[in-house]
Image 1: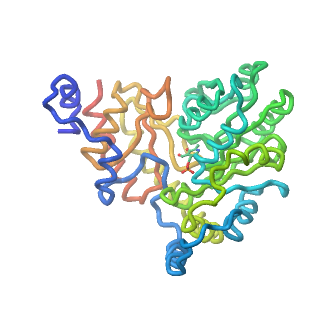
Image 2 (image 1 turned 60 degrees about the vertical axis):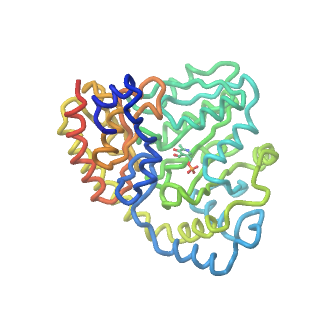
Image 3 (image 1 turned 180 degrees about the vertical axis):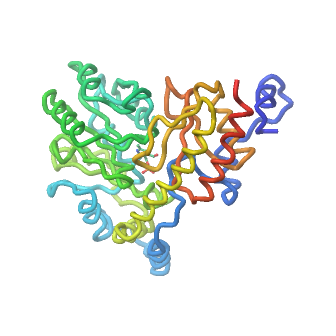
Length: 382
Ligand SMILES: Cc1ncc(COP(=O)(O)O)c(C=O)c1O
Protein backbone atom coordinates (compact mmCIF):
# COMPACT_ATOMS: atom_id res chain seq x y z
CA UNK A 1 0.00 0.00 0.00
CA UNK A 2 2.61 2.55 1.01
CA UNK A 3 4.73 1.99 -2.01
CA UNK A 4 2.27 2.32 -4.84
CA UNK A 5 2.45 5.71 -6.51
CA UNK A 6 -1.22 5.57 -7.50
CA UNK A 7 -2.21 4.74 -3.96
CA UNK A 8 -0.03 7.53 -2.61
CA UNK A 9 -1.84 10.05 -4.78
CA UNK A 10 -5.21 8.72 -3.72
CA UNK A 11 -4.21 8.72 -0.09
CA UNK A 12 -4.09 12.49 -0.14
CA UNK A 13 -7.73 12.55 -1.32
CA UNK A 14 -9.17 9.78 0.87
CA UNK A 15 -8.59 10.25 4.58
CA UNK A 16 -9.41 6.59 5.21
CA UNK A 17 -6.22 5.37 3.56
CA UNK A 18 -3.43 5.12 6.16
CA UNK A 19 -0.63 7.64 5.73
CA UNK A 20 2.78 6.40 4.62
CA UNK A 21 5.06 6.06 7.63
CA UNK A 22 7.84 8.56 8.00
CA UNK A 23 10.67 7.12 5.92
CA UNK A 24 13.13 7.29 8.80
CA UNK A 25 10.73 5.70 11.27
CA UNK A 26 10.16 2.91 8.78
CA UNK A 27 13.87 2.44 8.09
CA UNK A 28 14.80 2.49 11.77
CA UNK A 29 12.13 -0.12 12.45
CA UNK A 30 13.69 -2.43 9.83
CA UNK A 31 17.42 -1.74 10.21
CA UNK A 32 18.56 -5.22 9.14
CA UNK A 33 16.58 -5.29 5.91
CA UNK A 34 17.38 -1.77 4.73
CA UNK A 35 20.21 -0.80 2.40
CA UNK A 36 20.91 2.60 3.96
CA UNK A 37 21.88 4.87 1.06
CA UNK A 38 20.17 7.99 2.34
CA UNK A 39 22.52 9.79 4.73
CA UNK A 40 26.07 9.30 3.46
CA UNK A 41 26.78 7.11 6.47
CA UNK A 42 29.28 4.28 6.13
CA UNK A 43 28.07 0.70 6.45
CA UNK A 44 31.21 -1.02 5.21
CA UNK A 45 33.07 -2.52 8.18
CA UNK A 46 36.04 -0.31 9.01
CA UNK A 47 38.13 -1.95 11.70
CA UNK A 48 37.47 -4.06 14.77
CA UNK A 49 39.70 -1.75 16.83
CA UNK A 50 36.68 0.54 17.12
CA UNK A 51 34.46 -2.03 18.85
CA UNK A 52 37.35 -3.08 21.08
CA UNK A 53 38.00 0.51 22.17
CA UNK A 54 34.31 1.11 22.96
CA UNK A 55 34.00 -2.13 24.91
CA UNK A 56 37.17 -1.41 26.87
CA UNK A 57 35.86 2.04 27.81
CA UNK A 58 32.63 0.42 28.99
CA UNK A 59 34.49 -2.20 31.00
CA UNK A 60 36.68 0.51 32.54
CA UNK A 61 33.51 2.45 33.38
CA UNK A 62 35.03 5.55 31.86
CA UNK A 63 31.51 6.90 31.63
CA UNK A 64 31.50 7.58 35.37
CA UNK A 65 33.65 10.64 34.77
CA UNK A 66 33.14 13.77 32.74
CA UNK A 67 35.73 13.52 30.02
CA UNK A 68 38.77 15.81 30.09
CA UNK A 69 37.68 19.20 28.75
CA UNK A 70 40.22 19.13 25.92
CA UNK A 71 39.13 15.61 24.96
CA UNK A 72 40.91 12.32 25.66
CA UNK A 73 44.65 12.55 25.29
CA UNK A 74 45.74 12.20 21.69
CA UNK A 75 42.44 12.67 19.86
CA UNK A 76 42.76 16.34 18.88
CA UNK A 77 46.43 15.77 17.99
CA UNK A 78 45.63 12.87 15.73
CA UNK A 79 43.00 14.99 13.93
CA UNK A 80 45.48 17.82 13.56
CA UNK A 81 48.06 15.52 12.01
CA UNK A 82 45.65 13.66 9.83
CA UNK A 83 43.98 16.66 8.20
CA UNK A 84 47.25 18.61 8.26
CA UNK A 85 46.00 21.58 10.20
CA UNK A 86 48.39 24.49 10.72
CA UNK A 87 50.46 24.11 13.90
CA UNK A 88 48.79 26.95 15.76
CA UNK A 89 45.24 25.73 15.08
CA UNK A 90 43.05 24.77 18.00
CA UNK A 91 40.66 21.85 17.84
CA UNK A 92 37.38 21.60 19.73
CA UNK A 93 35.50 18.30 19.88
CA UNK A 94 31.79 18.63 19.16
CA UNK A 95 28.68 16.50 18.93
CA UNK A 96 29.19 15.82 15.23
CA UNK A 97 30.17 18.31 12.58
CA UNK A 98 26.65 19.67 12.78
CA UNK A 99 27.35 21.16 16.19
CA UNK A 100 30.63 22.62 14.94
CA UNK A 101 28.76 24.49 12.20
CA UNK A 102 26.14 25.58 14.72
CA UNK A 103 28.78 27.05 17.04
CA UNK A 104 30.64 28.84 14.27
CA UNK A 105 27.53 30.32 12.68
CA UNK A 106 26.20 31.52 16.02
CA UNK A 107 29.54 33.01 17.00
CA UNK A 108 30.77 34.55 13.79
CA UNK A 109 27.70 35.89 11.99
CA UNK A 110 25.89 39.09 12.73
CA UNK A 111 22.59 40.30 11.34
CA UNK A 112 22.68 40.97 7.62
CA UNK A 113 26.00 39.24 6.94
CA UNK A 114 25.89 37.59 3.55
CA UNK A 115 27.12 34.02 3.24
CA UNK A 116 27.98 32.68 -0.19
CA UNK A 117 26.93 29.07 -0.46
CA UNK A 118 25.37 26.68 -2.95
CA UNK A 119 22.11 25.11 -4.03
CA UNK A 120 22.11 22.10 -3.73
CA UNK A 121 23.86 21.81 -0.39
CA UNK A 122 23.62 20.30 3.07
CA UNK A 123 20.66 22.45 4.10
CA UNK A 124 20.87 22.21 7.92
CA UNK A 125 23.89 24.53 7.77
CA UNK A 126 21.85 27.03 5.77
CA UNK A 127 19.21 26.94 8.47
CA UNK A 128 21.90 27.70 11.05
CA UNK A 129 23.06 30.67 8.99
CA UNK A 130 19.50 32.01 8.87
CA UNK A 131 18.81 31.70 12.58
CA UNK A 132 22.13 33.42 13.26
CA UNK A 133 20.96 36.45 11.29
CA UNK A 134 22.97 35.68 8.17
CA UNK A 135 21.63 36.05 4.66
CA UNK A 136 22.11 33.09 2.32
CA UNK A 137 23.41 33.81 -1.14
CA UNK A 138 22.85 30.43 -2.75
CA UNK A 139 24.64 30.05 -6.06
CA UNK A 140 23.01 27.44 -8.29
CA UNK A 141 25.51 24.63 -8.91
CA UNK A 142 23.17 22.05 -10.40
CA UNK A 143 24.89 22.81 -13.70
CA UNK A 144 28.38 22.33 -15.07
CA UNK A 145 30.98 22.20 -13.52
CA UNK A 146 28.68 21.07 -10.67
CA UNK A 147 30.54 23.19 -8.08
CA UNK A 148 31.22 26.86 -7.36
CA UNK A 149 33.48 28.66 -9.78
CA UNK A 150 35.68 31.57 -8.68
CA UNK A 151 33.88 33.68 -11.25
CA UNK A 152 30.42 32.97 -9.80
CA UNK A 153 31.76 33.76 -6.33
CA UNK A 154 33.18 37.09 -7.48
CA UNK A 155 29.88 38.05 -9.06
CA UNK A 156 27.97 37.28 -5.87
CA UNK A 157 30.09 39.41 -3.56
CA UNK A 158 28.54 42.59 -2.16
CA UNK A 159 29.61 44.97 0.60
CA UNK A 160 27.73 42.76 3.04
CA UNK A 161 29.47 39.50 2.15
CA UNK A 162 31.44 38.15 5.09
CA UNK A 163 31.72 34.41 4.50
CA UNK A 164 32.12 31.71 1.89
CA UNK A 165 30.74 28.32 2.90
CA UNK A 166 32.68 25.61 1.08
CA UNK A 167 31.74 21.99 1.35
CA UNK A 168 34.50 19.97 -0.23
CA UNK A 169 33.80 17.36 -1.56
CA UNK A 170 30.26 18.49 -2.16
CA UNK A 171 27.18 16.94 -0.63
CA UNK A 172 25.15 15.88 -2.68
CA UNK A 173 26.92 16.05 -6.03
CA UNK A 174 30.23 14.35 -5.28
CA UNK A 175 32.32 17.07 -6.92
CA UNK A 176 35.57 18.28 -5.35
CA UNK A 177 37.57 21.46 -5.95
CA UNK A 178 40.96 21.37 -7.66
CA UNK A 179 44.03 22.96 -6.13
CA UNK A 180 43.97 25.95 -8.55
CA UNK A 181 40.28 26.52 -7.79
CA UNK A 182 40.92 26.47 -4.05
CA UNK A 183 43.85 28.80 -4.49
CA UNK A 184 41.74 31.28 -6.44
CA UNK A 185 38.85 31.10 -3.97
CA UNK A 186 41.34 31.84 -1.20
CA UNK A 187 42.68 34.82 -3.15
CA UNK A 188 39.13 36.14 -3.45
CA UNK A 189 38.73 35.75 0.31
CA UNK A 190 41.93 37.76 0.84
CA UNK A 191 40.91 40.48 -1.61
CA UNK A 192 37.50 40.97 0.00
CA UNK A 193 38.45 40.22 3.60
CA UNK A 194 36.18 37.18 3.84
CA UNK A 195 36.07 34.20 6.15
CA UNK A 196 35.96 30.71 4.66
CA UNK A 197 34.10 27.92 6.37
CA UNK A 198 35.78 24.82 5.00
CA UNK A 199 33.51 21.88 5.71
CA UNK A 200 35.78 18.89 5.16
CA UNK A 201 33.24 16.31 6.27
CA UNK A 202 33.91 14.17 3.17
CA UNK A 203 37.60 14.97 2.79
CA UNK A 204 38.94 11.53 3.63
CA UNK A 205 37.28 10.00 0.59
CA UNK A 206 39.55 11.88 -1.82
CA UNK A 207 41.74 14.40 0.03
CA UNK A 208 41.04 17.69 -1.75
CA UNK A 209 43.24 20.65 -0.73
CA UNK A 210 41.81 22.51 2.27
CA UNK A 211 41.63 26.31 2.29
CA UNK A 212 43.70 26.53 5.48
CA UNK A 213 46.71 25.64 3.34
CA UNK A 214 46.41 29.07 1.72
CA UNK A 215 44.45 31.26 4.13
CA UNK A 216 44.92 29.76 7.62
CA UNK A 217 44.00 33.02 9.34
CA UNK A 218 40.62 33.26 7.65
CA UNK A 219 39.51 29.61 7.67
CA UNK A 220 37.34 27.74 10.12
CA UNK A 221 37.34 24.01 9.39
CA UNK A 222 34.74 21.40 10.25
CA UNK A 223 35.70 17.74 10.46
CA UNK A 224 33.74 14.67 11.46
CA UNK A 225 34.20 11.00 12.24
CA UNK A 226 30.65 10.19 11.14
CA UNK A 227 31.17 9.31 7.53
CA UNK A 228 34.51 7.64 6.81
CA UNK A 229 34.83 5.99 10.25
CA UNK A 230 31.22 4.80 10.26
CA UNK A 231 30.58 6.57 13.57
CA UNK A 232 27.50 8.65 12.71
CA UNK A 233 25.56 7.23 15.66
CA UNK A 234 28.32 8.23 18.07
CA UNK A 235 27.85 11.94 17.30
CA UNK A 236 31.37 13.20 17.35
CA UNK A 237 33.12 15.77 15.18
CA UNK A 238 35.48 18.70 15.47
CA UNK A 239 35.79 22.41 14.93
CA UNK A 240 39.26 23.72 14.06
CA UNK A 241 40.43 27.32 13.75
CA UNK A 242 43.33 29.67 14.43
CA UNK A 243 43.45 31.04 18.01
CA UNK A 244 41.88 34.43 17.23
CA UNK A 245 38.81 32.80 15.65
CA UNK A 246 38.58 30.04 18.24
CA UNK A 247 38.52 32.70 20.97
CA UNK A 248 35.50 34.29 19.31
CA UNK A 249 33.75 30.93 19.11
CA UNK A 250 34.47 29.59 22.60
CA UNK A 251 31.66 31.54 24.33
CA UNK A 252 29.26 29.56 22.14
CA UNK A 253 30.80 26.21 23.01
CA UNK A 254 28.04 24.14 24.59
CA UNK A 255 30.44 21.34 25.56
CA UNK A 256 32.39 22.74 28.49
CA UNK A 257 32.06 19.23 29.91
CA UNK A 258 33.34 17.69 26.65
CA UNK A 259 31.55 15.14 24.46
CA UNK A 260 30.60 11.47 24.84
CA UNK A 261 33.53 9.41 26.11
CA UNK A 262 32.67 6.25 24.17
CA UNK A 263 32.52 8.29 20.98
CA UNK A 264 35.93 9.76 21.73
CA UNK A 265 37.45 6.32 22.32
CA UNK A 266 35.92 5.04 19.08
CA UNK A 267 37.17 8.05 17.11
CA UNK A 268 40.70 7.77 18.49
CA UNK A 269 40.90 4.05 17.71
CA UNK A 270 39.65 4.63 14.16
CA UNK A 271 42.01 7.53 13.48
CA UNK A 272 45.09 5.77 14.86
CA UNK A 273 44.55 2.99 12.32
CA UNK A 274 43.11 5.03 9.45
CA UNK A 275 45.94 4.26 7.04
CA UNK A 276 45.22 0.58 7.49
CA UNK A 277 41.50 0.70 6.62
CA UNK A 278 40.85 3.77 4.48
CA UNK A 279 42.39 2.49 1.19
CA UNK A 280 40.18 -0.62 1.16
CA UNK A 281 37.11 1.49 1.88
CA UNK A 282 37.92 3.86 -0.98
CA UNK A 283 38.45 0.90 -3.32
CA UNK A 284 35.05 -0.54 -2.47
CA UNK A 285 33.43 2.84 -3.12
CA UNK A 286 34.80 2.79 -6.67
CA UNK A 287 33.38 -0.68 -7.23
CA UNK A 288 30.00 0.32 -5.81
CA UNK A 289 29.68 3.50 -7.82
CA UNK A 290 30.48 1.57 -11.01
CA UNK A 291 27.68 -0.91 -10.22
CA UNK A 292 25.27 1.99 -9.71
CA UNK A 293 26.43 3.80 -12.83
CA UNK A 294 25.79 0.74 -15.01
CA UNK A 295 22.26 0.55 -13.68
CA UNK A 296 21.60 4.29 -14.12
CA UNK A 297 23.02 4.24 -17.65
CA UNK A 298 20.62 1.48 -18.57
CA UNK A 299 17.61 3.68 -17.77
CA UNK A 300 16.53 6.09 -20.50
CA UNK A 301 16.53 9.71 -19.37
CA UNK A 302 18.76 9.15 -16.30
CA UNK A 303 22.38 10.13 -15.83
CA UNK A 304 25.03 10.88 -13.23
CA UNK A 305 26.02 14.56 -13.34
CA UNK A 306 29.29 13.74 -11.56
CA UNK A 307 31.17 10.49 -12.11
CA UNK A 308 33.31 9.24 -10.55
CA UNK A 309 32.25 10.89 -7.33
CA UNK A 310 35.05 12.16 -5.09
CA UNK A 311 33.13 11.08 -2.03
CA UNK A 312 30.66 8.39 -0.94
CA UNK A 313 27.59 9.75 -2.71
CA UNK A 314 26.35 11.32 -5.90
CA UNK A 315 23.21 12.67 -7.48
CA UNK A 316 21.30 10.54 -9.96
CA UNK A 317 19.47 12.80 -12.39
CA UNK A 318 15.97 11.54 -13.17
CA UNK A 319 14.59 14.85 -14.49
CA UNK A 320 13.85 13.68 -18.02
CA UNK A 321 11.80 10.70 -16.83
CA UNK A 322 9.28 13.00 -15.15
CA UNK A 323 9.34 10.72 -12.09
CA UNK A 324 8.78 12.50 -8.80
CA UNK A 325 11.90 11.99 -6.62
CA UNK A 326 9.82 11.84 -3.43
CA UNK A 327 7.90 8.93 -4.90
CA UNK A 328 11.12 7.34 -6.13
CA UNK A 329 12.42 7.54 -2.56
CA UNK A 330 9.23 5.98 -1.21
CA UNK A 331 9.02 3.22 -3.77
CA UNK A 332 12.69 2.31 -3.44
CA UNK A 333 12.21 2.12 0.33
CA UNK A 334 8.83 0.48 0.76
CA UNK A 335 9.01 -1.88 -2.25
CA UNK A 336 12.71 -2.71 -2.26
CA UNK A 337 14.09 -1.78 1.17
CA UNK A 338 16.63 0.49 -0.49
CA UNK A 339 16.70 3.88 1.23
CA UNK A 340 17.81 6.72 -1.07
CA UNK A 341 17.07 10.42 -0.61
CA UNK A 342 14.87 12.68 -2.70
CA UNK A 343 16.70 15.67 -4.19
CA UNK A 344 14.16 17.89 -2.45
CA UNK A 345 16.00 17.30 0.81
CA UNK A 346 19.17 18.95 -0.44
CA UNK A 347 17.96 21.50 -2.96
CA UNK A 348 15.32 24.21 -2.99
CA UNK A 349 15.36 24.75 -6.73
CA UNK A 350 16.67 21.56 -8.33
CA UNK A 351 15.44 18.83 -6.02
CA UNK A 352 12.79 17.59 -8.42
CA UNK A 353 15.51 16.57 -10.88
CA UNK A 354 17.42 14.03 -8.84
CA UNK A 355 17.80 11.60 -6.02
CA UNK A 356 20.93 11.37 -3.86
CA UNK A 357 22.48 7.95 -3.48
CA UNK A 358 25.17 7.12 -0.92
CA UNK A 359 27.17 4.06 -1.82
CA UNK A 360 29.25 3.36 1.29
CA UNK A 361 27.25 0.18 1.70
CA UNK A 362 28.22 -3.42 1.03
CA UNK A 363 28.60 -4.47 -2.61
CA UNK A 364 25.43 -6.51 -2.22
CA UNK A 365 23.69 -3.29 -1.18
CA UNK A 366 24.88 -1.51 -4.32
CA UNK A 367 23.61 -4.45 -6.37
CA UNK A 368 20.22 -4.23 -4.71
CA UNK A 369 20.03 -0.58 -5.74
CA UNK A 370 21.08 -1.53 -9.29
CA UNK A 371 18.28 -4.06 -9.53
CA UNK A 372 15.55 -1.92 -7.99
CA UNK A 373 16.21 1.44 -9.64
CA UNK A 374 15.21 0.57 -13.25
CA UNK A 375 12.00 -1.09 -12.00
CA UNK A 376 11.04 1.92 -9.92
CA UNK A 377 11.66 4.41 -12.71
CA UNK A 378 9.71 2.20 -15.15
CA UNK A 379 6.70 2.43 -12.80
CA UNK A 380 6.95 6.16 -12.08
CA UNK A 381 7.99 7.44 -15.49
CA UNK A 382 5.58 9.99 -16.99
C1 LIG B 1 28.40 18.77 4.51
C2 LIG B 1 28.05 18.22 5.85
N1 LIG B 1 28.49 18.85 6.95
C3 LIG B 1 28.20 18.40 8.17
C4 LIG B 1 27.45 17.25 8.33
C5 LIG B 1 27.18 16.83 9.73
O1 LIG B 1 27.58 15.53 9.99
P1 LIG B 1 27.83 15.04 11.48
O2 LIG B 1 27.07 15.91 12.39
O3 LIG B 1 27.35 13.63 11.49
O4 LIG B 1 29.28 15.14 11.69
C6 LIG B 1 26.96 16.57 7.23
C7 LIG B 1 26.11 15.39 7.37
O5 LIG B 1 25.56 14.84 6.46
C8 LIG B 1 27.28 17.06 5.94
O6 LIG B 1 26.85 16.47 4.83
